Length: 391
Image (cartoon, rainbow, N blue to C red; front, side, top):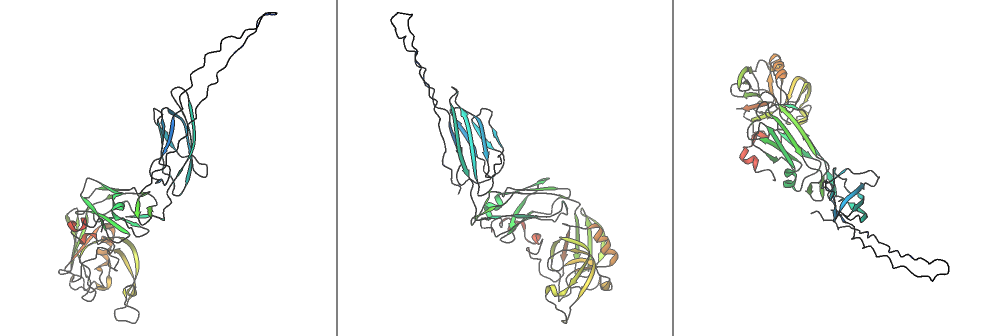
């Protein structure tokens, strides 16, 4: 809860001096005092100046200086280093409002001058103190590229576990053009993802505006800064890899454009089923079975440089060139979970598919891709996805 600051004011009342005059007669004449001059009426007090809020101020909340019974003639707000805070005075001079956020844990000086309609001045010097949070949480946004496929979720990952998830999601606004229904879902205590009910429409523009600075994230933590991200969705590239037929059909905006022979994971290392989203691509990757527990000297160990790689999960699944399994492609599933392609098909796939494009795996004999396995977001029905905005 923000504490409202105490109202600071000072009133300077102008005093009016009443003057008298005397005169003397000519030489030898008796002196006589002239009548006292009439006293001028005292001016009313100058305007009452207040600063709101003044204590425990949320730095994202604008500070306002008010003049009651007059107009502001000058407001100067400075930080501890003496730098001036930008602000705007209303046309009628009644208020001045900051135009920029303040910093956490700072005391600012506010020097104000105001004048009443009768000309009585007020001069006030006061302070504004911002709250000093226990910790500040930064947030990273994925994707880190502006051109993505239709399967790319939007992810915000916080630097610490978030206690008040509702507040965090409330601060995040997603706008899609054309409009598409979507929702947030917490993947972990630090990561919340946004996806539409179905894949993004090709040609969409998606923008995130995260007003996190000053947001109370619970447990004494506040957002460190706002986040903004915009990405464009290119053509709808979707590959359908079928472990029963050992073939993969390639669709561009719904039209079948190519069919490839494949080899998926063996019975010992079955490929996960469900929609996979490409999260990375590289011309070559050193693949080491030790990364998932098959160590040197054990059956099935390998460490190979593999070409034309596109990652589809963080569990070591890729679509890549596999010249060693060309004889099994189209007939047997013999990989360690990857989608094996011939060098020619792998080159074509690498040239056409990229970040955010989709590979849907069916009939592999493997379990569903977990939603937390990089971009497993599409494994969950949207009705269930929507319920996880604050879980």
